[in-house]
Structure formats: C-alpha cells, structure tokens
Amino acid sequence: MSSPIYLTEDIRRIEREAGDTTAPLMERAGAAAADLAARLAAGKDILVLAGPGNNGGDARIAADRLRERFFRVTVASRMDEIPQAKWGLVVDGLFGIGLARDVDGEYARLVEFANQQRCPVLALDIPSGLHSDTGRVLGRAVRATHTVTFIGLKPGLLTLDGPDHCGEISVADLGLPPQKGSAWVASRELFAGALKPRSLNYHKGLAGTLGILGGAATMTGAALLAARAALKLGAGRVRVGLLEPITVDPVAPELMLADADQLLGADMDALVVGPGLGQSERAETLLGAALASELPCVLDADALNLIAENTDLRHACARRTAETLVTPHPAEAGRLLAETTASVQADRVKAARMLSENLNAHVLLKGAGSILVARDGHWFVNRTGNPGMASAGMGDVLSGMLGALLAQRYTGETALVLATHLHGAAGDSLARDGIGPVGMTAGELIDAARRVWNTWL
View 1 (cartoon, rainbow, N blue to C red):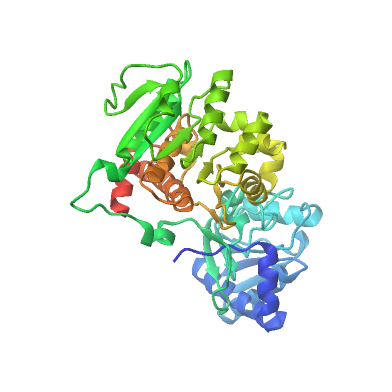
View 2: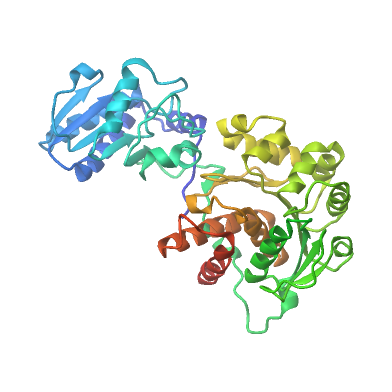
C-alpha cells in the first residue's frame, strides 16, 4: 500500500479526533522512539536533545524508556548540560511539526552540535529546523541519519530540503487506525489495477499514436528525445512535428518526421507540445492550435513559457475539457504564477495546487520530491530519482513517457503518477548499475525506463 501524507493541519485534526488526551499519544510516541533508538544506538551512551514543546515531551519519555533498558541517557536542553562522552546515538527532540520560525540562539547551537556528531542521529517526527509542510530549512536544521515520524508522513520530509535532512524514514502510527486523506506517496501500487499488460491479439493501433510538437532550430534534439522515449514506452506510432525539419532520425528510424505545420492535421490519440519549441510567433500559433484540439495533451518547456506570457493561451488551457498535463520546473512554475522561483520553492505543494486550479490541469512540479497534483485535487509526492538526473534532456524524456501513456489511453492522473514514478525509478536503476549519478544522460534513461516498465507490466 502507498503511504498517505498529511499536512500539519491534518495531523492536528487527527490528534483531536483520536478521542484521547495528549499524554497517552505522547507516551506512545516516546515508546516508539525508544524502540528505534535502542536498535540504532552504537553504544550505551545516548544524548537526548529535548525542546520546550510536545516534541521535547516525546523525547523525555523516550529517554525514560531507554533508561529502563539500561542505556546511559543524558537529556539536554542547553549546551552546558551536555557532558563529554562518546555518544552512541543522538536523539533530536528539539522541535516538531509546529515550528514556524528560524532556529536561533541556544537551540541553533544544539542543532550544530548534533550535526557535528559521528554517531547515528535519530530525529523525532521531523528533523528540528525543517518546516513540516514545505521542507524548507528554517535557519538551520538537524541532518539526521534516521527519522521516526508519528501518525503519518509529512510533505516536508519528502520534498525540497527534506530528503537531505531526514535520512531513513520510518512511520509510527501510534496505534491509530488508517486516516482519510487526499495525498499519497506516488507508487505503482496505487494504480496496479490500471496497468495494461498486452494480450496476444495486440496491434499497434491499440497502442495509440502520439504527436510531438517542437524542435526549433538548434533544439531538434529535445523533440527527438521525447519521441524516442515515447516509442520505447509503448506508443504504437510517434509522429514528430519539427519546426526545423529533418528527414530521418538515425537513432530511431521508426519515428515519423514531418514539418510542424502538418502535425496537427494528422490522426493522433495524444499530443506533447514544448520540447525545443522555442518562443517564436510561429511556436505561439502552433501552441494555440494544439490547445484548441480535443486531444489529451502534455505541455512542457517552451509551451509553458509561452502560456506564462500570453493571457489568451492561458485561458485556452484553462478552458480545455480534454486531459491536460503541465510539467514545470520551479522557474517555469514561478513564471506561470507570476511569482519568483524562491516563492514557489518556499511552498511547493501550495504552488502546484495553485497551478492545477489556475490551468485546469494535472500538474507535475519537478524537483527533489516532485509534487504531483491531479485535476480532482488529489496530490502526491514522488520519492524516486537521484541527483544524476539533473542533466539536459531529462524533462524531454519524461514528457515523451507521459505522452506515451496518454496515447495508450491511460487517464491523466494515472499517466502523471506512473510516468513520473517510472522516470525516477529508471534513474535509480542506472545509478545502481554504476551509470551515474555523475554523468548519467537522458538518452541512457530511455532504455532503463523501458526495462523497468516491462517488469511492472
């Protein structure tokens, strides 16, 4: 089962509805923390950093439970309370999900002390200094090797700076039943029933025809990468409408190459617009025609930049009834929202949800812990992928993968989650094989994605 994700307001509601006082939940949290701490400790001396709020209460209970197991436990809220010792574990219980201001003063010194230790560091609920809903570092934050989070996952653990600070994450549900939610970790299990293994009586018409619109002068490669990815992810035919035409792709001669103006009149099941499109007047006209179509459509790269600058195109996107998937990186999202990149990154979930509402689209906001928002309001955080994928052309490959699934008649939400999760999983597969993280290329990712996709099917 895929794990649900809860915002701070969701956690507070769950705690209220638990029909319990804070103390018993705190007892359960402290006990769960002590269980994990006992397994992680590299020696008998454990330092517990306890803050002033509920997180500190959890930490103090964990300290009591650890003493019962004959660990030597020091609880400290100030630097002068820390003795000289060879710590087998540091437990971070300074601040939890309620933190909304920068960590400073004595607590900042405790955070720095924790980060200087060579032993395992266990954060309770969330590393101190990390914003629970956004993953922003508030001044400074503990870099934990492990995090035990209570009740359920929080987005701040999974996106932006969260993955660099949380280490290995485990969830302690504190004995509460599964809670209703609207956000989950992206996984193929969520859509296992939607996967479409091929029958023996299959033909290419059933796999659909995808159109790729892009490839202006000097940027033909972007459209070809998207097209090659779509072909190898199962699209029956791939037509590529290039603003700078070439006669054949020697790497993938199966692709049907044409002038961009000819593409929109062809018979197709889905469309990808944007890879290498450019921002010329001709590109703007072609995008307008694509938005007027009733085809499921992926909008990426320059298509998004054109929409950001043109109110008519923006309205045309919002009016579409067909499935629309938009795939901005943070800078493109900022342009679409008329905000800075920094403000988008400050609350990635909020930005992606606003984009989905404004454009009437399924949204993929790229980055560490990509945020996926479906048009119906459900949202997801993707945990696959690695830093090796920060290289040119990776987004073009993803666009082609999304388009291939749309052409094969997967719904927009299903395509959004499966293609994004698969894209990252393919990158992880390459890294495990030593092809990366440094030097991994978008072209290499295509065959890896095909291999992983076939194992899923």
